Length: 122
Image (cartoon, rainbow, N blue to C red; front, side):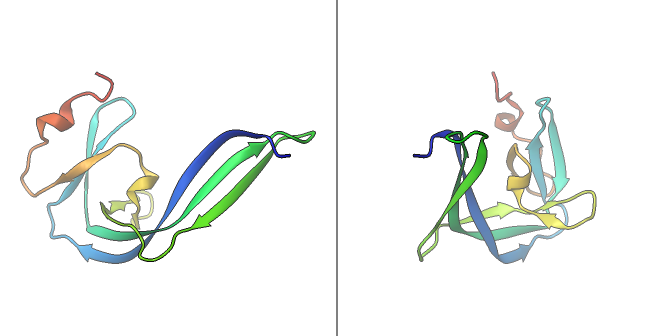
């Protein structure tokens, strides 16, 4: 029997549509030091949840091994709309899941709302 340790889950979203935003829209991101970083937001991504992946360390043998199990979702898929982020190293758009701490979208000229400025650990 497999003994599972440190079981974790990951949701696999697939981008199915991209809607460009006019210049001036930004994403507010909370950094690990609790400061807020603003980054231009070029687009909104429509995504579908296609699978949930479970992964764990199998410790039943002589040496631990990483195991995974993928559970495909059925249609109609759950959807979400998320802001696209620039990968500042090569200029391509990426999913916000690659960067933790996304607080929200800011319209052109909009100041950072007070609720975003509140510390997450307060």
